[in-house]
Length: 186
Image 1 (cartoon, rainbow, N blue to C red):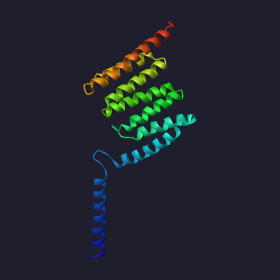
Image 2 (image 1 turned 90 degrees about the horizontal axis):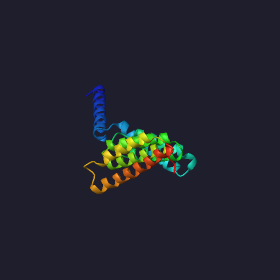
Image 3 (image 1 turned 180 degrees about the vertical axis):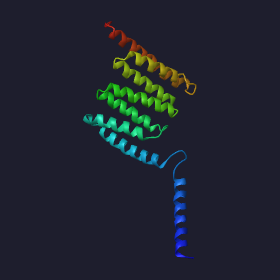
Image 4 (image 1 turned 120 degrees about the vertical axis):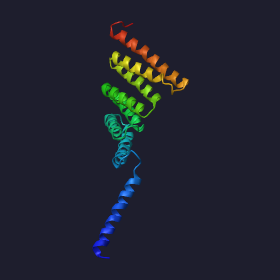
């Protein structure tokens, strides 16, 4: 056997081993990029958590949570938590518009991941933010969407009742806010 043929066989063996390792190291439907992205997201989440107890850093923490969510694949419910935290922190920093966007996106991602209960609750939270932000029409639409989600047959009666109670409470708040905005202050 010549040195050239040994080199070729060694090359083919190494190439086949690399292809084989790649085929078995990545879950079906995932890519190596997904693994890198999730690892990067975990680092951002850890940094965001460390900043969340520092009021002056809430805007950076919200950005980190939002960025981490964007790195996670569709259906990954950790992204929902990230966006929920981003929305809360955006609200506390006074950015109601960003809070609304984050909560709506969190609800959408929860539905994509099959978590109807969380999606419905996030829609109620988003509707509350819209109400407080002076947008009763948006609040009513979000409340309607939450009510539709709450009617899902996959939810137990108890869970459905809890979400529906939150929607009803929100509708009352929205009506009060609308009448106050119309000049009917008591």
